[in-house]
Image (cartoon, rainbow, N blue to C red; front, side, top):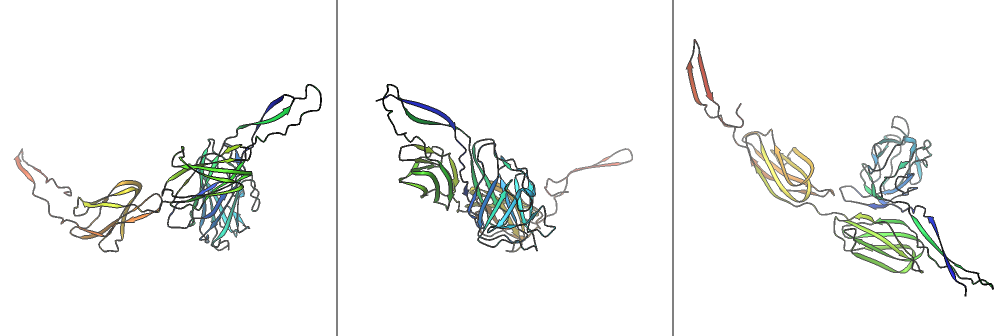
Length: 419
């Protein structure tokens, strides 16, 4: 038998376009469903067209704005002609504002693309509609697009946030680099005469993993789906760090894959990757991606205290078990009517109330909102401002006789509101 000579060629893999994954967080509005982005490239630093689709549970009324906030790492230099929007496959006419009869006005500020459904022009989007937004040279309905969005220069997972009109969500884009792959073939050596020995080439090509989608995310569960270009067994490595720690495997061979991760921790960021193995044992490992489980637990408010009570001022302090905003609602009735708010997230909260009336009973309660939009409100409490008593007498009063004059001197009382 002839000697088998192994020849190795180097080639370059085209970018594998991974379908972007949706990551959602709870709030007081509805979460968009079936959200996805189909960019023409996920290569770091490349320019790309985008085709975003999502289903709006609540719809978009006239006058409301659909906001697409790209991560600041993207370079977004667009005009109205570069953006199209469709409602259940029907294109809406667009312009740079709503002064005409167009269905929608498109504006771009930094990395935010805003689409206003113009009042009075009949462009309202009904609940459960599928919204399609095309950005780039693929926008051809109201003008022809000529610009594209430039991807971040560094490999990583970046986000597009959908919101402003009531429903909301986030799409994760796994930006990747282009690398080389080694391709092998077994070639028979025909030296020595006789008929050549025919050797079937060995399959050395790993499955291509694509269309990775994270959906149905809850506080304790998430579904991951993906495709392979040939039947393959797959495993999902996942965990709270990039070391993963847990693996869920499917032993059967499929081209369309779906797994559900259970018993996840609430409000946590999870890292995961997919490993696909074909019948010849070739393995493909995806990039490491992330999703965040829903945080559905409100902050716990404790140690509410009103101190430093004076005729016109008071100080309110409290703590929460997670970082959250600070707000005090107060007034002379249970309707309150006034409030002081600090938007910074904190564990220890302190707000000063000013402009109060002396010798008055005030009702108050504190409110804290965590980063996921969960609200905690304390019970009503009351406090009474102190009386605005007259100041004490001056001290060390002196009269000194001078040259045709009297010099008066004294020390004022040491009281905070003395003027």
